[in-house]
Length: 104
Length: 351
Image (cartoon, rainbow over all chains, first blue to last red):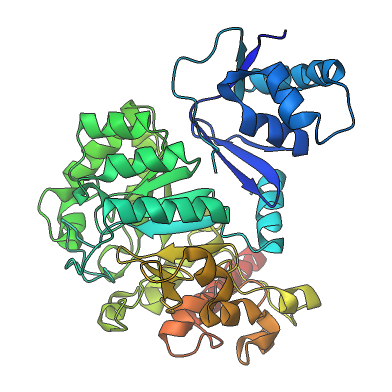
């Protein structure tokens, strides 16, 4: 679980609107609005940084939570997003460039 | 609009976010539509680098929905560079094109760039009518070919049918054509004055008697522009509402960098070559004035019985001389919709 990397889905548009990440599918116009934690995970999902690194550097400083618990919670959440094609989870770093949609 | 989408628009309004921007990349065009409001000469379009800089600023401002239009987009040799940049920066992208220059390679590239929808104008199912409007022989055939290529590439396609005198009653044929092609279609009787203020094209508007016939077409009633208007004294919510999203959550950028509340609302607010978009959006007197107006501030419209359902366009009102005034074409539409609704009620009563 420590080596899991998160990659944003393709063919999605995304923007933080008033603090919340709004994601829209180009294929079927499905719309998603992520909460604060989800928005943070999405922005950090560059396909290279491991989930544990994301949690330790982005999530834990913002929330009063230990890293192991946060990784478990984040993984549960990201698996739900994966079911919608919003992210993909793998143990291999994404082969493409680290930058992706949703960058600001 | 779904609840979640409404929630996003409400959040954007609350936080003054320009959620949707129409960005015309060129006014040059390979058609010469008789009702077009544009000057097709190139007066110094934004360069690729300038467009990229504008997109950076829009992304920072919170824009999600980006509509690239023209003129004819495919005349921009850097179109796919721009699409690539826009998609890498998170925008949801729609395109408007006439499709004349579109071949399979372009359709596939558009699809590969993650464009969500492509809109093409079709004025009639009859080539002689469509081509007389575009002034390009063979244009209908080429536009239909483009629709087929875009569909075959897996793209969502929308056919827009602008109604005017010469094609007012061809819309059933266009709708049938759209159904045959497996795409959606819309109908709009709005003819806009030219950007320079000239009203010569307004003579092409569908005359009231023809409009009445169209509004009596029960198959069109689900479309907003055709629905019977609500009448009676406006309620408080109506009077406190903003007249339109233009300038609140949406705006327009011309190929020369001019920022307006809407493509139909050419109120000068600034130019991104001289002023950062953020400053124009948040600090220009023009946007401040537009945002200050509520329906209750409209001296004529606020007391009109049709105000709660009118399609009044503040841009068209501005083009007529007063952004707080009525837009006469929409007054006519409301009255015509009312007349059509009354006629339908009489038919129902006698049946």
